[in-house]
Image (cartoon, rainbow, N blue to C red; front, side, top):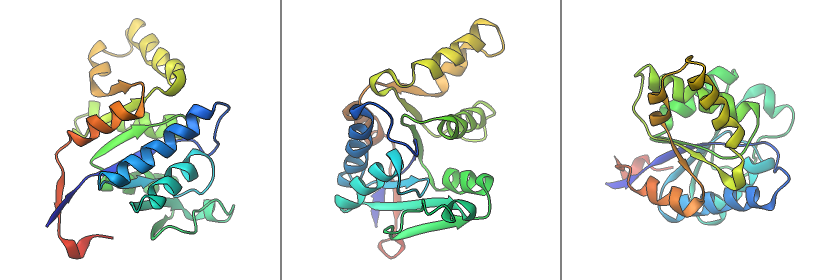
Length: 193
């Protein structure tokens, strides 16, 4: 038996306008692979998703991509993944990623990234899971997202305790240290991908 963690990463299908964004995705992908963790992500070959997956694969990592069928028609699916699950909808994609993950990370992204992150925070608030959630605030990329949550707290739509459902980290080395503190799940050698 070996131990591993499966980390779901939500991130953009574009690279953004700062080099720190792509650098962070590459550093996270490489770091997860070097630590023996499995990357679970949205299955794309473009944007930060592609940067993340390519770095993990280049470092010999175990990568699971999960993408809905309709997105494969746009030729955005990563064709070099050893394990690609094609789902029938965005909802089943998110559910499958949730089921495969021991923890969640939000890298820079847009509405899809926000949607996925808000959903796992909501499910945690509803006590449907107790998995760690990390928001990587790379170069201030999550400031507006966090301000939105703080505004909901200030307007008494959300309890202050909601902020305890996730951790905000400013850099990838710190994030990787926190991931390594998550208990690893034993996996039979024959079950490894």
